[in-house]
Length: 439
Image (cartoon, rainbow, N blue to C red):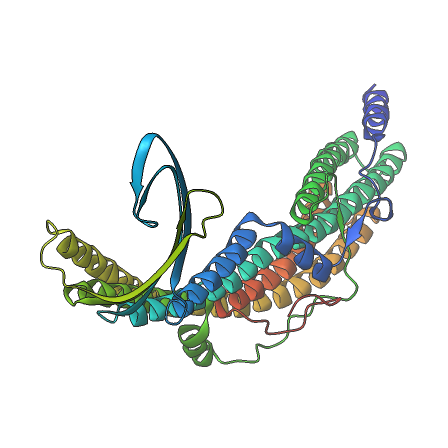
């Protein structure tokens, strides 16, 4: 009776296992890591915004330079139709129709060193924007590599799940044979049938996780459907080419976040000095060319003028003082932020550096654990077939084998993500990207 029940359950489980598998890797579009990084950089909204901020900062700097030599120009033409004759100031005669055209130019010669400080601010903002663009690029790379490695990891975990199902099916067959010959009790086959069922459930879940990971990678690289990760060469995890202290000093000196913080502080300092310059007088050179007539285009009378204007601010309802106070507040905040970022970089570099070393050590131990678990499983299988051990020992060995395989997969890609995190902090690659890609 128990034998027939076990057989029926086995048929049911095997029938349920016949389900559509996830698409094979060769049936999906594939991207290498380098290709994924290049495509993701063009699509990530934060990176696109950072790139546009660079363009805006370049125009701001151009405007701050041209204001030294290029006057502000304004062209204006006015046509007036009167019901009665009115005096035309240009022609000196009465007329019902008056046309006035003029071009005005004004060049600031001095404004309390405001133009110099504006140029300093624009230069600092451009440096900040460029560093921000680099920072956004590596943040994008960090997310892209995480999605890329997730596909690889889920694919490897799917292999582990499939191998677990295969082992469970083989062990169930062995147990059924031993039960039929009287060498084992009926509960052995039921225990292995339960293990087979759990392995199949895990396989279903792992297929779903791989599918989701592929869709996420597709989203990252601009594809509407799933995309598979293609790895042309094995991911290496060598010793870091830089010491921890050197990495800390490099991060403080040239990491994108540190460069942005220092540039923002310089920009705030220049803005504050420009605001204080409003206490000094402003000197402008101006000129105008005018034409007057009764019809268009006006040409009856042409006049030109040139002059020098001196403006000395005295009081503007405390708006100047308010501007200085606000700019000083911005300066103090950016100065505090710069100091905090530099201190945080020390902690972040140590975390990433130690995380990489710890992940490498964990990967080495995980590789050893796989070897040991595989040998232990082989021994337990032979002992069970010989009747020298129990089914519980065999199941425990099989579970340790699956855990060791999964642990190695996780350790391998955790190491790569730790390296990517350190590179994102430094703003440069420590090792070449497999299969090419951006520097």
